[in-house]
Length: 386
Image (cartoon, rainbow, N blue to C red; front, side, top):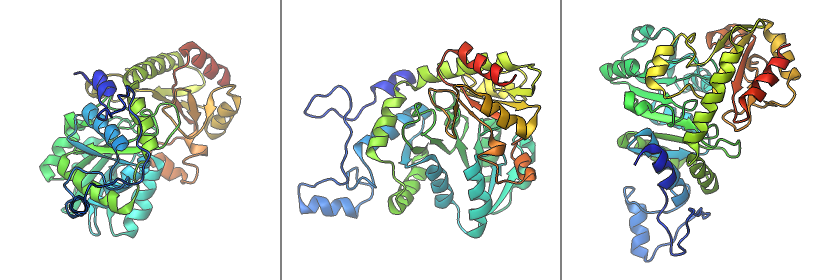
């Protein structure tokens, strides 16, 4: 079956109640028929048996299975949030004395882990410019264990050639980890291009309505096994209810992402060459510096676009205050269009030099384009730009 069908028809085994829609398993623990069964469950980690919902749960397992099928991955593990997925990858595969190479254009909290916490634990990092992938090889050290990227990146929408990076990682035996949150598996499957692990903040487009938190990591089975043991012992597990919501959301992911992208492309074209803007950035605009790469590895441009206000920092605040009905919130991937100004909000604590280093310019506006009528969205933005 094709991915669109798998997203809908992959379900937990039907119970004796003969339900059509998968129930959710709201239980903290599971029972055993005998004392021997219980002992065996705890003695052998490889047994496919439910013990405790911090370890596994049928609702969570269904969500993981769907994401694996959509990403083309061997196995996966779910987490309570997207940042739990990021930190679990770092903590599982990096140790004191190791080195990680990351794109400088990453989500703010990921930047904080890389620059504040990993050095505290004896793990070094190096940043590279996603627009200069040829600079990566010079950063590789004998103790480099991981290369981490977001593509498209948050919030700058930088795009990198996944096959190029994967080949480099294979050459030097480096673990290649990709954050696929902006694209989702409906738009891009990094495993196809050589990624070892792919992670998501499922809170965003996978949920699609701003309801629940969640994260997921999928990839090679032997790597996921190590992640599973870390998450089982440290506890950042996904709740069964959130997993049930997210699994239902995957049923509409493909149709939603098509509409998000259609609307975003319409808005991006409508804003290009606006006199109040220095530039508009969207992966499927020909003006995007990595347009050819985006077209090669993505089925559409996704639901996020950015633009730069000529009026800078104060212009960003004025734009947000001029919005009449667009949402101002720090989430994205919602059915409702969301505008944010990173320089005065999510990245305001960074110095100007640090913001510039990660692509956060003073007038940058990130727009998570929703499912409203595209002309209504465009008219709302245009009136706020006056």
